[in-house]
Length: 268
Image (cartoon, rainbow, N blue to C red; front, side, top):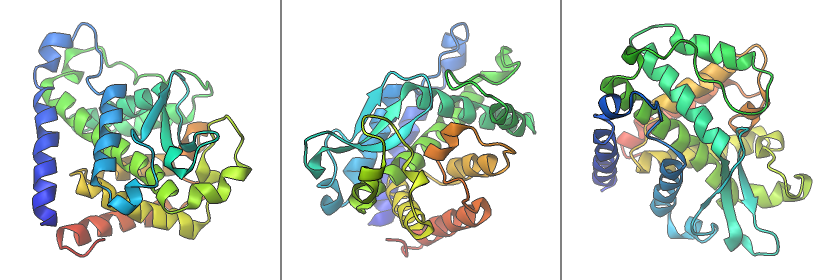
């Protein structure tokens, strides 16, 4: 039944890719990514719908709220004065832009090896906290073909899905409520700054289960985590994705194992 559910979700995601096939021909002048804030919110809704009822009860519906902030931010939040049913994940417009750019660079890397690492190196050297810069020299049509944009959409879904699912887990595992008092009221703060290594691990596993149940594989997330691990200096936004001292190699081995276990019916 789990694999059947996975197949059904896969067909839904595949249908989204089909909508991108004519992207290069129809939108090459505007260069607007097809995966925007609405796509991110929909991924959040799909993740929420795939959770067990006992976990859904810990979250507000809709489970995702957005803020018009250029700086990348993704964090569990709780609406002031409300019960745990007011728990959501907040995502900034800047975080969606960031994942779009990273996903695009990863897609281009398939046809131009080294492109992804160079872009992530550029991000590591970026000191501004505002709008995420796009990759260098991607104005040519060859960087915006239908094949590349299909890859871009896939990586976007996987990266966004995993990071969002992990943050959902912070609520239903009780981790957000544990640290809420230490987080700055009214501000988006990475909960990863407070988690123990064991708490981080349990959230990752829960997020992986949630993501895989939505037909979102781990390849994109592993690429994102690996790139952050290679940064000589991590920008502030990386704390919304992984803790500062996390062992990225171990993390990606865990994700690979979770995916194998999932397809063998041994992950829950």
